[in-house]
Length: 164
Length: 215
Image (cartoon, rainbow over all chains, first blue to last red; front, side, top):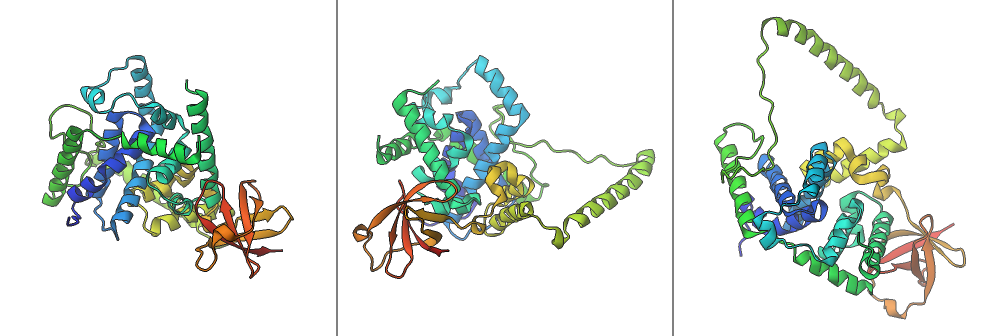
């Protein structure tokens, strides 16, 4: 299949990857969809060329992560979450396509933010620790420590019933 | 649960997370509409049009409309702007004197290196502005500035210098010894090679690293 470089081609290639990153940070289908749109919007606003699809994907993953962190830290998001928690009202889409996350996904969602990124890149994207370190701008030992901590937390949640 | 089982379960959990086709199409329509607007030159994109008209919140940013400066307002805004620019210039000037660079400055440079080596522009801007916020405490140390030291049980120390790609050596035939990372205490295994260097393997990882002797 021919590779297309327009926004549609890039979007079709990576939308699900970007969505997974956003979902793992925000934990809600609606918020993740907004974050996906905002991430790709950056490309529309500031078009750029990529060396490869891998470069394209890496750019989008980092941009999505940064956007989600901004969202999580915004005061308005905190207020919205606080209200939503008292009156849960899932949309039709949520009910049909994003069922209650399974046990493992819930454990992932409960991980501290700093672990989610390395878990996603290592387990889902299959990236090596030195690659992740380069993407994060962190020493490889930090990535290894975070992976080890995340593993321990996930194992504790899944084996020990550590859920809340 | 083994590492492999955990990895498999996490991968499966993520595989179930998929955006609905409707949402996928709706966002694409919004992006294409925004792209068309930008191509037509109807102004910079400051938000997303809601092409569905469904009233659903989309990730648009509010835009500040320029307010024309007229009459009395202009008379005080202009001197104030000049003073502000001068003040910023003085502050920036004091910040870029090379002799005063501190380790913290190096951390910021690390962020910039990340950006210039092909990381996202959008993210790069954010990293520039708040690298310490996004990268937490470890942002103060660029990756290449730290050599990881592996210490064997006999006290010998080796600095990790590169990934090790075995060509003639079969890792399975090496004599692996327990070791740990100095500083973090991370457990690992090390195998000495004939040339005095050693190969390091971290628990739960498939990558091998080459390390050279340290005094």
